[in-house]
Length: 269
Image 1 (spheres, rainbow, N blue to C red):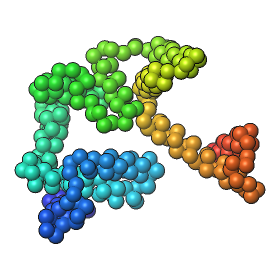
Image 2: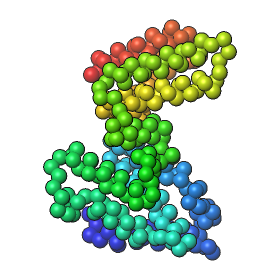
Image 3: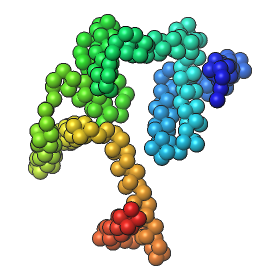
Image 4: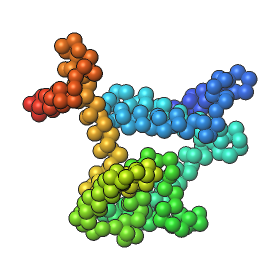
C-alpha cells in the first residue's frame, strides 16, 4: 500500500495537466469542457457499479482509476479557469465530512445507524437553508437516473411526513395506476401523451413500493435486466442448436425454451 497519498495523486495531476497543455497536449482532451465530459463521468460511475455487482474486484481498481480521472479532469478545468483545483476539492470534502460527522469529530453522541442518518439529514437541511434552498426537494439532481431520482424524491418527502404509514395503500396505488394505464389503452383514440403520463405515474408508484419494501428500484431493475439477458442468451443457444435461426421459431417454441432455461436454473440451485 502507498505511504503518501500526495505522492500517489501527483503523477495523475501532472498527466492531466500535460494532456491539457495548449501547445503539446492531446487535441481531444484540449477540446473538452465541464459539460462535454459529464457523459463520460456517468459512464465511468456505472462501470464501477457494474464491476462491483459482478464482484470482479480484481478489475475494480482500474474502473475506480477511470472514475478518479474524471474528478481530476474537472479539477484541471477549474484550475485553468481560476475557479478551484484538486486541493480545494479535497479541502471541501474533508470539511463536509467532518461537519456531518459530529459524533466522530465532535462531542455529539449517536448510538445507531438510524440516529446517524437522521442527524446527517438534519445537517443537510441546515446547509440547504444556508444556501437559500428551502424546499425539501432542492438539490435533488436532475441528472440522476429516473428511478433513482424517484426514490430520492420519495425519501425526502417521507422525512417530513408525506408518506403512507404501511404497505397496503402503497400496493393499492400501484393497482390504481395500472388501471389508469389500461383505461388510456382502451380509449377509442389513444392519446400518447396521456398514456405516457400514466405509465410514468405507474413507474413512480412501483418505485414507491420498492422503497417501502426496502429495495432500491434502480438496483432491482439492473438485476432484472441482467437476469433476463442471461436467460435470453441461453434461449438463443437452445433455439439455434438445431441449425435454425432464432426467427424461425414461433413464440410458443421460444416460451418453451425459456421455461427450459428457468427449470435448469432451479435444478442448479
